[in-house]
Length: 249
Image 1 (cartoon, rainbow, N blue to C red):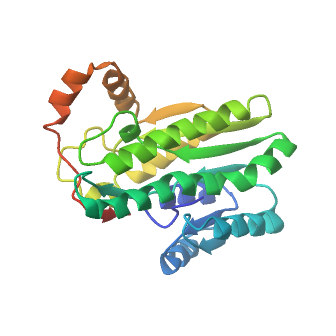
Image 2 (cartoon, helix red, strand yellow):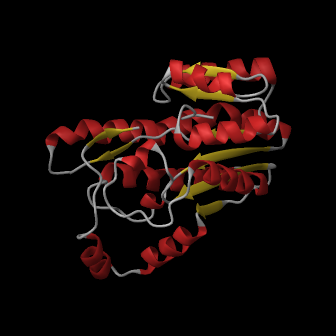
């Protein structure tokens, strides 16, 4: 599981460890990872790396498989969120960082496990998307684009693996209490605590659902957003709150 050091990732780690799972925990912050490891029952592996470094991700995957075998579940959770404006030349670097982490990092995380799971005939490949990927949010072009790409990428993989026994699960969270949302100054309806979100994510993963929005109320909102004609959507969201510019984990 990537992005394991805080927020949803840490909550999922606690949830699965409490149920006896052996975990491979990936994040950039080594000291925080080891602090989490000290809290968890059982035997686990930690890998301090950036998911944008695909060779390092591949080596971590090989090491985990050597030590523990092919995992039952792989969760590509690592992501960064950033307020961006296309008019700002300085934000090009932020666009690049978000796409490299949120999209290419997801591909790098899942790729090493596709063939081993397919050979075994079972497994769950899970990607954490966002309701922000359903329609482009003002001031969040990079993040919305990355999560839209995640949804499409996972859908392609799901069809590629149809009939193999390997399930591809796309989870699009709404607002979850994490460091990523803590910087937002605008209203965030239906917000879930990270621990409750982890429980709901785990249920969806176990069921092998192809796509779900959590919480369900945001799923209704997401469906409505898809149906809004562009002029109405533009009028409503031109007035919406925006994430502050500057990279956030």
